[in-house]
Length: 258
Ligand code: HPA
Image 1: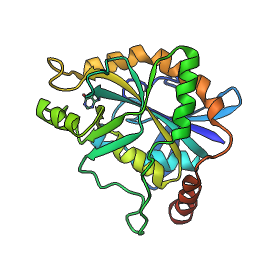
Image 2: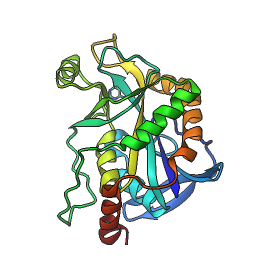
Image 3: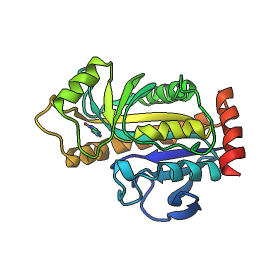
Image 4: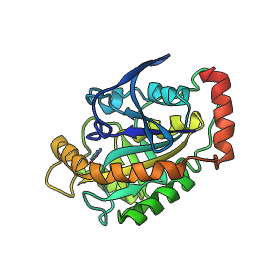
């Protein structure tokens, strides 16, 4: 089995910037890198494109997921830059997400023409999260296990009033891309985990937020993120754990993937 890695903003070059292959999908062409970590086949897709050319509302979410499924991936570890909403989180912290709240206006689904309602009671794979947490602990990398990700439409950052509202709703972190990504992962029957990298305090908790600081903090975190992923992939292969994923992958194969 293969592992898919999705690189967030600033992590486009985690596996170098050459050797990209192209896969044509019904949703457009997707650029990806293929590599092996020990014995494990790894497919890496930079979420926003190799040169960070697609803003959050124009990411090819459908194409990225379709390509990973076509290339034989069944487990995905995604990485994303996020702002801290929870005051106990700080720039540089790494977080494994377990729930999301959707504040986007996106209507992106594989099941536009079919009536398929996937269960998202556990949108992120609890077993993968546990493995990542344990591998991180063994490496001396501090990770928080469990966080609520609120997804905004972007591409602007949020207002302090919005962030106060999100905090009242229980959100821990804020980002612009995990919906629909996590939902499409579920629709396509992947085991999916999100490693979020806190790059800034959310709006109102620091003076202003810049894209430059997001990329700079992601760059600083890339060594430990790369290290963690490298050690984790071998631990993540093996059996599938979740019957729902197997069921959803069957439906996806029948209706979408062919
Ligand atoms: N808000 C939304 N998305 C983000 C942020 C933020 O503060 N930081 C990094 N991605």
